Image (cartoon, rainbow, N blue to C red; front, top):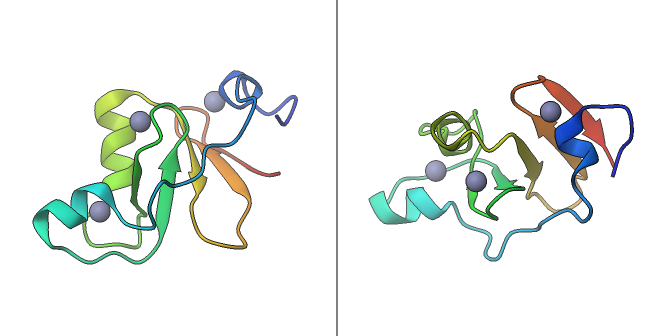
Length: 89
Ligand SMILES: [Zn+2]
Ligand SMILES: [Zn+2]
Ligand SMILES: [Zn+2]
């Protein structure tokens, strides 16, 4: 994956895509979301910071899984929380 961005992104060989186009946590609590992100560590798909529950960010902080990818069709980017690094691929 992208070189020179951060160690977490360099460790990604293949970007993980969502299994389903839903937020795993919002589904459980019947909440709504705006955009989806997929954790590159465990393949969880969760909602973005523009969504009321911000599940992707909560997941990253709780689990220390560093990198998410956009799960939106047509968007090809990764974001690393600890390095606050954004890259398109
Ligand atoms: Zn990183
Ligand atoms: Zn959610
Ligand atoms: Zn994860």
